[in-house]
Image 1 (cartoon, rainbow, N blue to C red):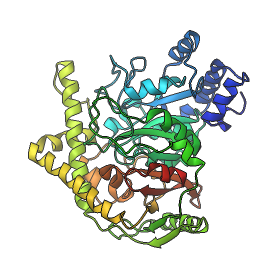
Image 2 (image 1 turned 135 degrees about the vertical axis):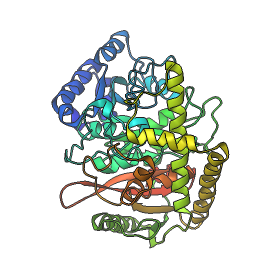
Image 3 (image 1 turned 30 degrees about the vertical axis):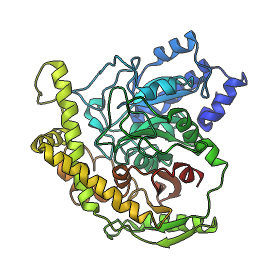
Image 4 (image 1 turned 45 degrees about the vertical axis):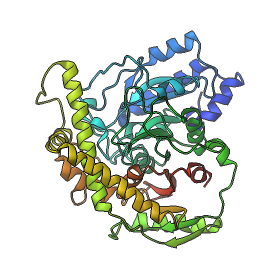
Length: 458
């Protein structure tokens, strides 16, 4: 198939249904594209081509995406047939005894999973440069730039045409940031829409959720439609959808009152290219009939960022301690990269009341932003304060607190996305703009909690 990379998932599934191509032929097209671009990108880090061929030979479910090639992030979405590294030398070649609910729902659509994509160690990076994979993951638009993190491998694979869509997860912008860096669509649904079990009760105090990186909006909508829904025993629940994400694409949104923020939330300046991009988006939204006015949410943003940092450190410490217990040994010097190692040290320095105080802080922040969204339907910002960073700037050779909170580090570079992990609100990055030197610039929109379908319709 010569033009494989020009089709989205829905188009490929239609070709299979019409008998114009077989699942095996699509898999071979994806593997061919993988061979062409992955040596430069290091996006796909585990290839299970024979597993995929065996599944095709046994017969795939005749679901919405029957026969379409697909990739899983190398973090979460546990699957018996697809071991993972979790971006870590310590976790390398982790095998699972039970499939995640999310994987089960995806598999029922007839997707053909043939590998996993790169992620930073334990998912705590804004770039994807994990030592376990031997080299950084690069951006297809410019290999000197990062594809973002932590779903950077999935974003690079989709942007390069290896697959039309891939799994990602988002605990602090980890779908939306790579989408912005790679010129893709990335949507984080409201807390509670996506299943998280049975291997995990929640991710990072409910801040993390799963989702997808896609080249078309309709692919994200269709993937969400087959995955959202209650899961037995889940700790959170989102308001039920009215008609679903795909139906929302055919229903124009009402006239919206949209707040435009062209600085960081603390009022400091962002890069001129990103400021110009968000004003271009504001003009487009105005031309569409919406009301767009300058406004900046007043909330304890710095407190939220520190609380996020504490919660993620505790989560990392728990994951590593559990892994070491299962291995029956202590931590070896080369098990972890410096960011993870110092995250664990920080997490272990916090007492139980400190952790609960951090959780209370993010919930208090959620109420502060809910008050802001009582006046506004949506908040418009760029996804990042700068165009995609250069490879190496956000590698894992750093102290965790400095990596997250230091000047010019993660929260200065990505000051918007994590807010909506803390609040649980739906948010998306839309590929609307480009820098003068040809780098994608994502536009970020967030809506009220539960207003996922309105956001998707926009």
